[in-house]
Image 1: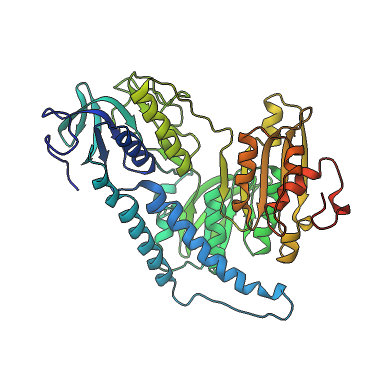
Image 2: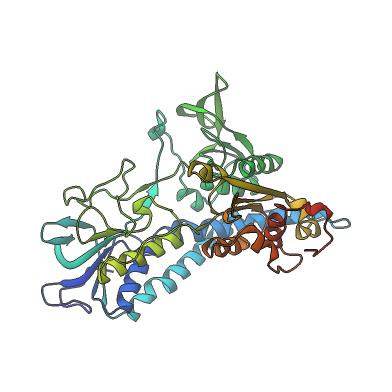
Length: 479
């Protein structure tokens, strides 16, 4: 795609003036463009690089399809948990697995992004590097004028300040998904969701994996969940090293060697390749933001308020470039809020109170609302319930009781403040808790709700009942 001329479909006049300009053609950008078009606004939609952004191209879609592929392999290998069943599985062609992933990415990019553009005749797609200038937005030397502007340029993998890291051919969450041959061993630096997801995926593919982090796995999760996930990964052969200080990293004849300090002692950890999974940095360079009077936070993200407004009047930002709630659905949500406010007078507020989040490890980690620590820090008096999956009939029937469900409630009212699930099917259960929090339900109301038997989500009911009774003394479906 190339920059359209000034008379392209969707232009307001021959001078290239639009109601709204959107910089960034990822999930947030598309959400903003569609929302604006549905309101009849004339939109300049400016993209640079591969259309579709992180999720479809290098994030959610490719990673989760590879994770699911290796999960199916793991399930075959663990089928013997059912008496009388013995099975085995192996990877016949890793390159074929990756190519199938690429085909899915290409198909979704085409059908859910590129092919959508002609359906919105007030949207003009412009491809090129955008930069804010006094008169408007410069796109490859062409001037675009707009009444309001939304910046949605996303984020990219960040690299930690480990000495000599630039001299090592490291992998990122992007390049790791394109490997056409598997390394014998992999050192994963970072214990967040990317490190845990990809570390387990590669381990199940037969790679010897070591995950290393400064604090603990999933530091933002409930500590019980992080500790349990660590045990499960270790049971699969993943080495987990936490509480470390990183020294220098360098090449050696077998791959890479990282110096660390653990427990006061210095040691060197070696692997064939290293994957950097220490977070993401906002894509704010070369946009001319600071020159335009748009403030950035210390991590480089664009500062926005609850209405998605930047510090410059008429300019909004949404998605990962704000450093806020870096999930594709929250990027789309924030973009809709930004458009509504840009076009209709700043009436909408961004609210992540009932935002669900999922880590696609196995078991999955799913959460919504406040953790116990955050709730206490915000001044709530809380009570909690933690239910091991051995009390959930679905888990017993599946012969897989890895995990737990923890609920956080306000002590006096019983209002549900947070729900945290570690379960093989946890992702499909968290939305029930999200709705409960959004609607202000109490744990008593949750426990009185009818749930289907032999489902993982029934564990939410049991965890809610556990505030008032011993669920070990209940019969199936009792209560």
